[in-house]
Every structure is written in structure tokens, then in C-alpha cells.
Image (cartoon, rainbow, N blue to C red; front, top):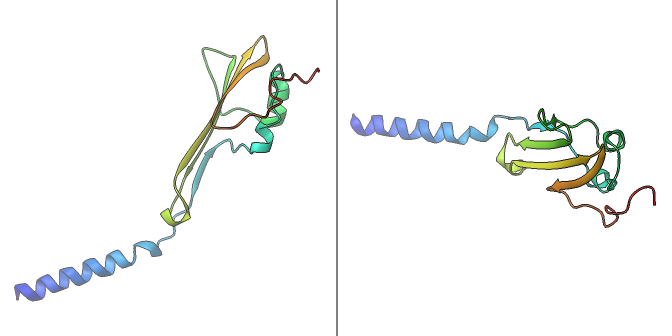
Length: 118
């Protein structure tokens, strides 16, 4: 009788584990999706309005420092076969309402240090 119960438990465990991939789970994107081409349009000395036109509104504006904007994007995959979870961020610092520094997970263009006025 014990052997039969053990067999039933093992069979049930195998059947349940086989169904794990049948459940569809959606990907959950959060934040601002930034395209590399848009980030490459950034230049030093751009105004806040120009940056907002190129990248859109930031996800977070620092409450204590209004001269720092954060663009965050996170993808939580529902199923592992569609890829890994990832997070990208871009941090823009302004000085006198103009871009002074950009840091984050994106490559800036070679022309970043060339102002639009030149």
C-alpha cells in the first residue's frame, strides 16, 4: 500500500511539473522605454524643454534637486524562454537649466560634447 501511495505522489508531481510551461505569463514593462537613436540626439547645453521633446517626460524628477532627471526602464519577463529580466537607466544633470552631464546604461554619441549652437 505504501508503494502505491508513493507511486501516486510521484506521478502527480511529474504531471504538475510538466504543466508549468503551459501557463502564459505576460511581460511587465515599467518606466520610459528609450531608444538608442533618441539618446544619441542628446547634446551638452540642451535645455530641459529640448530634452523633454527628444526623450519625453522623465519617470522621476528628484524632489530635492530639480536639476536631476531619471529615466528608468525595467522589463520583468513572464516566462524565462523570452529572455532575462533587465533594467536600464539614464540620469541627466542640468546646470542653469542646461544639460551638463549624462550618465547611465546608454552610449552617448561622439557629438555629445558639441553644443547645438555650434
